[in-house]
Image (cartoon, rainbow, N blue to C red; front, top):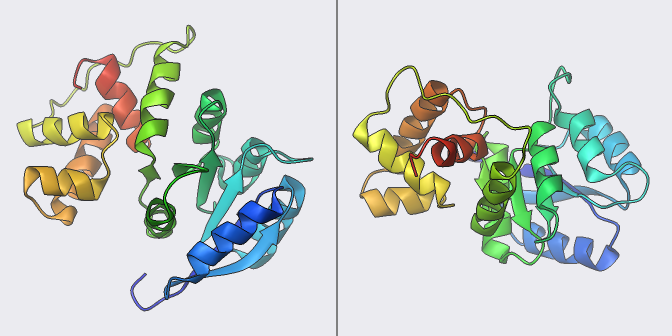
Length: 219
């Protein structure tokens, strides 16, 4: 996204929160809020019309909620899916799991720092995922308690020691930048290890990588 502006759509039924998000994001030279919506139905319509780079969606909204809006914009049946980042609260873990299934690529808490919000938008724009560490831990706890979710099989192709290090840190909620710092490697190296681990574990994204790690004792 170097040299390009990340176009963002905001959807939340609280006008004060939308205003706060807009102020934070518009303060960045590479991010522009191009539309706002107060409900999921309007968010889906605006997103389909404008094709923003990132949609930042609340979960609880009037009409079409954030889960359904995510499915309509980024679900497995969408021919040209958009990038969706979900803003959630501590008591909505089961909703986050549903959003993940519906194609969301990022999760932040509504009271997250401006820096984390900005990082999540930038990560989504380039095809990466950023999940708030608190959300990751709580989501994994919720997923581990689902009686209908079987334990994932061990990978057919073993992870290398370095891939195991990366997966273990992702399972603890660390971002790619934090993993790179901890392991004294470059960010691109972390992304390569994570991509290889994702393929070997049969995971669709970093949240599922973390889930596989906890299920198989890799964390």
